[in-house]
Image (cartoon, rainbow, N blue to C red; front, side, top):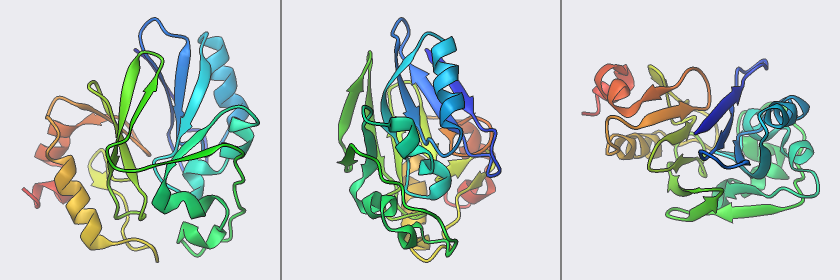
Length: 206
């Protein structure tokens, strides 16, 4: 598997790039910043982006989506966070942010399966951080967005957040198998088992 990350931005947001072994088709997750750098990283690796996935509608995860996608690439986002692309107030933080007008937006819901270049990605709706937060799950890894980080979890105190939904989503996360690698929206990768054992926010849910 090809896997790389771009995180050189003020929010340390991870923009993940992934491709199946032997495929030149890459999927880009959470293009918040540095669209030119991400495109160049893929070019140097001999990969071409075929789809862009947003784990949720916060600006640090979708801010450069319009530039990155251009006229050709689709952006997948949960239907509950679709409004965040055109309504800055839907970001929920109270911060002034511009709209993100992507030309080809495709909404997803729980259980949708997306096939790209040799692997299938399943949508796991995990609201709480935002109404449309999702994890993108495959047989080999999960992109957790701002649900779970190494040693921590995402905030649930924004105007459109829900602490109750966050707890339910974290309990769903704990149903995943221990050895599954986790690639979060911020910080280093981890595994489900490591977070189950040592993440203080998850230990208390067991």
